[in-house]
Image 1 (tube, rainbow, N blue to C red):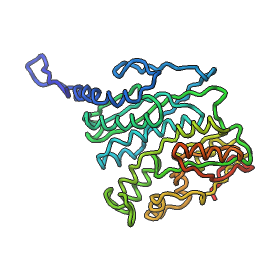
Image 2: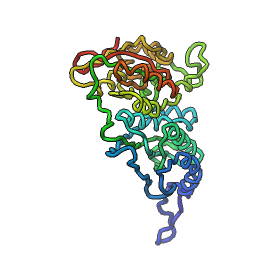
Image 3: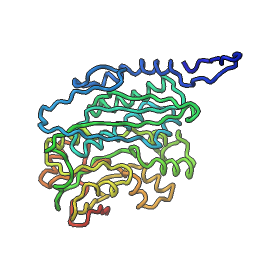
Image 4: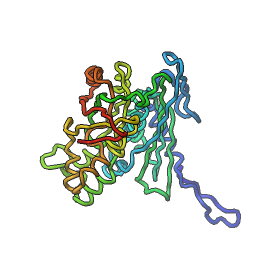
Length: 353
C-alpha cells in the first residue's frame, strides 16, 4: 500500500503518510520470480526473497580460486528506454557492462545483483526491467541471486528509473589475466559492436536529439531500416562467454573492454611498460550510427574516438601464432572478430591509424 492516513492524538488532524507503495513492491516481487529463477545455476542456494543471495563456490578445477568483482550502470541510455517506453532490454546492457569487465581478468561470471531505483514503483515496469537483467544473466551464464527495488517518491519523476549492477566471478590465481605477458609482435583481435553499447549517450543525445532535432521514431539515417530510437537502444553484446572460451583455447595475454574512453582509454590499461598498441581503424567497418553522429554534430575524429567504441567492443591480445585459432573460437560463439593491429615498442600508448 502506498500510504495509510493517520490521525494525531489531539483532535484528528491528518498526519504524515508513508508514500512508498509496499503492495506494489510485493506484486513486483511476485512478477519477477520466474525470470529470476530462470537464471539459477546449480550452485545457487535458497530462493528469491531472502535477506541475502547464497552461492556455493566450487573449487573443482580451481585449486586457488580468486573472486573478481565489478559494478557498473547504463548511464543515460536509460533515458532513451524511458522515452520510448521500452524497458525490457536495458537490463541486458547492465549485465554486459559488469560481466564483460570481469572477463578482462579471465574470470567466469558466477552471479549478479541489481539495484533499480524508480520514481514510482509500477509492477509491470519493474517486471520488464528485471526481465532484461535476467536475459543478460542467461546470456552471460551467471545467476541473478539478489537485488533491490527502491522507490523514491518526490525525488525522481514517477516514470524515471536508474539501474546499477554488481557481478562476481572466479578465476584460478594462476589464470588471472593482467597484461604483464603482452609482448612486442602480439596480435590485437577486435570483437565487433553493432552499436554504442552503454557509452557516449550524453554526446549522442546532444547531437541527434538537440542539435539535429531528430525524433526517436525518425529514420536513423536516409534509407535506414531502423529508427533513431532503435539504434540508440540496441542492446549491448555480451562477450564474456566467447572470451572465456578463447582463454581456454589459446594464450590470451590481455583483454580490454572498450567502453567510456574509447579504444585509447581502455586498451592502454593492459599494456606493459615499453609497449604500444598500433590499431588499424581500417580493419573493421564502423556502424553507420557513428558517422551520422560525427556528421550531424561536426564532432572531431579525436573526440569520436575518445567517447565511442566506434564498432569494436572488446580487444584480445594474443601471440601471432594463436591468432587464427582465437578467431575460430570466437566465430564459433557468433563473433566475426578481426585482426585490428599489433603490439609495437613504445611507452604504453594506443596509436590509432
